[in-house]
Image 1 (cartoon, rainbow, N blue to C red):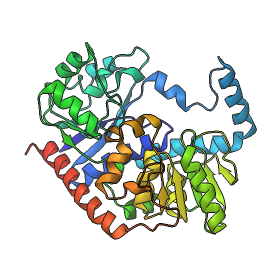
Image 2 (cartoon, one colour):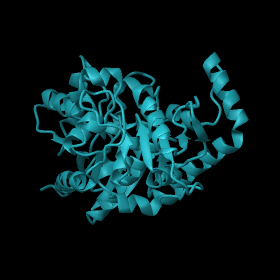
Image 3 (cartoon, rainbow, N blue to C red):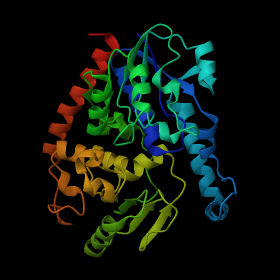
Image 4 (cartoon, helix red, strand yellow):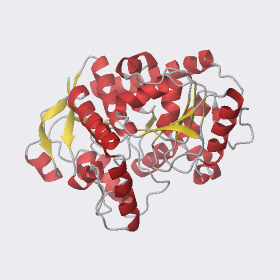
Length: 370
């Protein structure tokens, strides 16, 4: 079947591009053609630009930092652009507004609203749902959802009614987080499947084929933090002291981690994969940092935000690691593993293979209408 996927595929964000690629590949492996609908809202593409609009002190500081490391940031920019151009099959036409999609929708048999926070109304400039990501432009064909996120624990009026109306014509619904599943079921009164993040639909071997090997060949501790590292940052220091391995920081934030021997500013998606694949161990507070540690069988430690720790059932990191039997890799919980604790990857992969099969079955049935 001709399948059109709409999601955040163009943002210069590791998780966004890798999940889009993974969904496309997973659909193709089911035997269906899949193209990513090249929908790019202007206000979201601006976040890819090397320099920010100089309207705050923080933006000025960031721009100064970019200027100092311009060569590295330009390589990063080019690598993200190349990943989309080389690895993603895009629709022939690029769309920049929902009206354009409604006037001339891409011809498909099945339309898939993909993963990431595409159903979070608060991330758009007008604080409203983006109709395109709810497939309102579809004139003929099945509508299904694979692992979208609302990104919020509650959805007050009038958003709940609006979403109910949008989803009434969907043939199959799923969510990537347990809280999202609960919200969608309460809003729609329908069954919603809980599925894996798309990056887990592919295997570590498949991701390894895309990975670019890092320059460093000696063992290193990879640190990838998208916010203040907190307790897991201290764990990285503990591992460094115990092993003597240097700390390599993949810049998810600009601030240099104390003790980091090298900070990587120029990694694109392929370099991101290579850094995880070749790390001796990983410390992160990123969901996808945890995912690719798992995919490449790397010993790792991760963390949850204070909000997630207060309600771990709503945390996608906790939900995933609990499902795979390795929630003890979350630093700061009462049963957190010690720094030298080993991971039973044979057991983890048995559970991951089962979960992957369930999610792939949902995707297959949703596309084919079974």
